[in-house]
Each structure stands twice: as C-alpha cells, then as structure tokens.
Amino acid sequence: MQTIIQKCTMSVKNIYNEFDASHDFDHIVRVLKNAKQIAGTIPHADVSIITLAVLLHDIEDPKYQSVSAHSVSQILSQVGADEQTIETVQKTINSVSFNGGNERDITSIEGAIVRDADRLDAMGAIGIARTFAFGGARGRKLYDADEVTRKDMTEAEYRSKETSSVTHFFEKLLLLKERMVTDEGKRLAEQRHTFMVTFLQQLSDETDLALDTR
Image 1 (cartoon, rainbow, N blue to C red):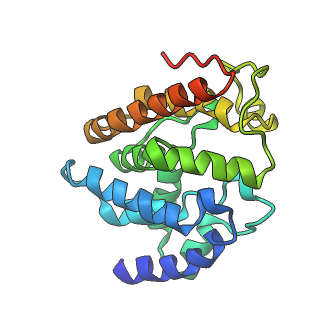
Image 2 (cartoon, one colour):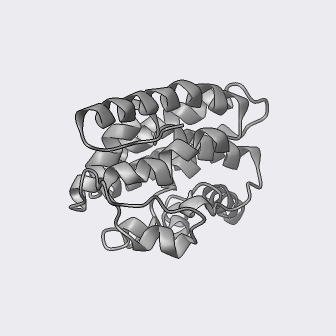
Image 3 (tube, rainbow, N blue to C red):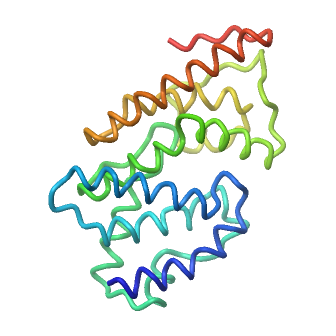
C-alpha cells in the first residue's frame, strides 16, 4: 500500500498545483497532518485509506472541473489500487464535502476523520487566508454590506451564487465547529473558531460592517 500512496502523491501533486492557492497541494499536506493527528486518537483507523482519501478528496471538486479532468477511480487504477481499495476511498471522499450544509452521511470512521481534517483547514488563520485567496482568484468582493446570508440552501443554490468572501464565513466557516464529528476534531476546532470570530470582530471595527458573530 505504501507504494500506491507514493505513486498517488506524485500523480496528484501537479494536478493540485494547477488549482488556486486555496486548494493547492499545500492544502493537501495540511489536511493530511490534521487527519493523522485525529487518527492517532482513534484505535483501528485505517491510515492508508485516510491518506489516499486526503490525497484525492478535491480531485473531482465541482469548483475545479474546468481545471481538472481527472477522476479518483482513474488515478487509483493507474497507481495499482485494487477495486476494493478504490471503492473504499471513494466512499470515504463522498462524505467530506460541505455542499451548503447538505453533506452526505458518514459511513466510516475514516470518513469522519477526513471530513474533520478538511474542515479544520477551512478554519482559523489558514481558513481566513484560504477564503480570501479563493475569493481573489474568482474576482469576488472582500465584503458586501448589503449581502444577506443565505440559510437552508440546496447544494445547487450554495454553488450558484458568487458571494463575497466575508459572507462565506457566515454561510459555511462559522458553522463548522458544531458539525465536527470526532472528539479530537471538536477540540481542535474550538480555538480556530474563536480566532475567526476575533478576526471578524476586528474587521467590523475597521469597516461599516455590522457583523453578528454569535
């Protein structure tokens, strides 16, 4: 399995570095670090499956379909993974995406670990940096005082409107703490959430935004 992981790492690195800075290979490295930290607190978690799922979890992201024409199954087949491994990795990845709050059910502890690890990288200082990096790459406004935060969205509604970067905090990032699954993920999310709230309070002080971060 280690050879497959090494080949997979080599295969995806260049793909991710075609994405913008919010979802480049450095993002994968950070999520993998988070995942291994969480996995270390959970007996019997399959670190090989977790690693492959982290390496591949953004390959089919709808946001980057114009950049990546690759598929998870294609890459895993090319690096020598068997059908069982491919199916398990795909199921693990399927439970990761936020989808406007319409995430799929978690079917394994590996799925819970990868989901929490990925969401941790959307929080805290790095989450703030990634949000503005993504917004800048898409030409989005930093903030919009007239924009109304959407709630109870479908996945299509979540993806269809290009909101300002600050609005994204209220439609996703500030919601993540309460959606963490693992005990370690919940613990790590607390400090990152608090940091985001502090940032938004400071931003409110410096602008005409009336931000309610409760």
